[in-house]
Image 1 (spheres, rainbow, N blue to C red):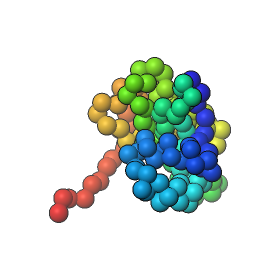
Image 2 (cartoon, rainbow, N blue to C red):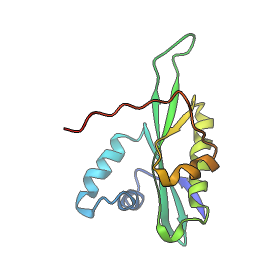
Image 3 (spheres, rainbow, N blue to C red):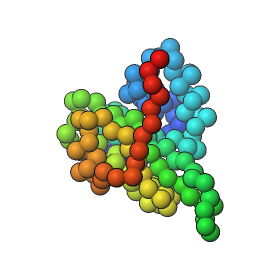
Length: 143
């Protein structure tokens, strides 16, 4: 298994990323434009096995308001982790998380968050994430 940053300039990588997000071929151009427009803030990673992309995960990098001596206060958020069903439980997800967290360390991010579905909580706990007592969430009321 190979894990690497996806190339936002390679249409094959972008097409695989779109497919993993259930974005149809008729919207590939629109998705490719979104990927290009967000290339500095949304970093895609892919897992390859058997010559095809079998999983992906995104690291969103955002800035916090400057404070103290620091004007460079960046943090990350893991988004859209997906591994094809036939490749699950074979290490692709863990390898994607390792690559994302290595990128976070290299960039000196303050922390990395993830908003997980219930079934994936244990996966993130096994990969170094922990529950945080100060993380709060607001959601708008349904109309």
